[in-house]
Image (cartoon, rainbow, N blue to C red; front, side):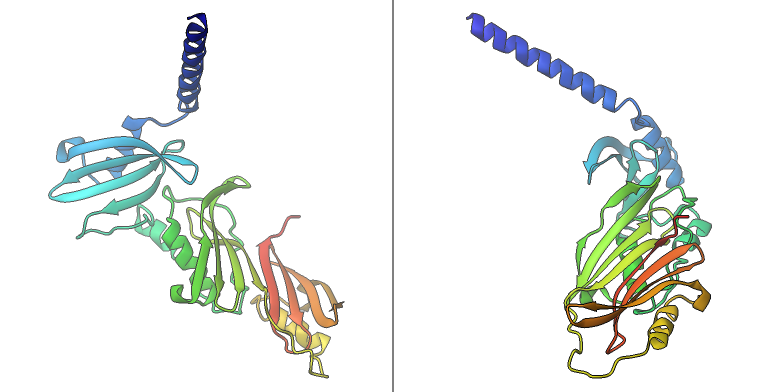
Length: 286
């Protein structure tokens, strides 16, 4: 009998601690009422204009958010509002209205999200140097981030397999980490600003590329440098900070680094074919 009482007491203590911990973890949240107000303002509606409104706290990819759902004029609305910041991270409406991830709450914000340079692979120099500056008050959404990465790589969705594209908080900013690979196992990894859609950094790796080792001639160092500089519009020879030829298990490679417009680019080029095996770009840390 005493043993049962002891077990019940321990269970009650654990329950109380868990409830307190959960309550404390939610103390910094904007609250259901604030989330509802944000959603209604985004829809340009008042509470008197809608019916069947509900606000539920949910979690996706480790991110807590309020799911605000309501109806108005025969239209169904659903807004996902970040529980910590009060930012709208996703919007879904019934047919007849724009649905899918939100792309900004004003024409200016939408224009900013769509202003990513449209360069085709293998021209990798279009990575934006505006790695910060989240001026919009809504995330662009995972699908938009994927489209931006594909456009930058010059690929279509049916040509790749996505590995993941989670929303992450890194170095003081929210970004989508979009990873995918092609049928011949060329791997791409993009970091997309969650607010503006800017390409913060990216990495390209031709993992299973077969070098032309049977060829007796190689491109010159100057040709390799020009190939690399051509991927960074505006960069010149003075922006080439490192450059060398390396023998990697009998495979000759040109390797180097370009620093231009506050971005740092690293590359690896096959010395026989001039094929860019690896390329990465990220903000230059001074």
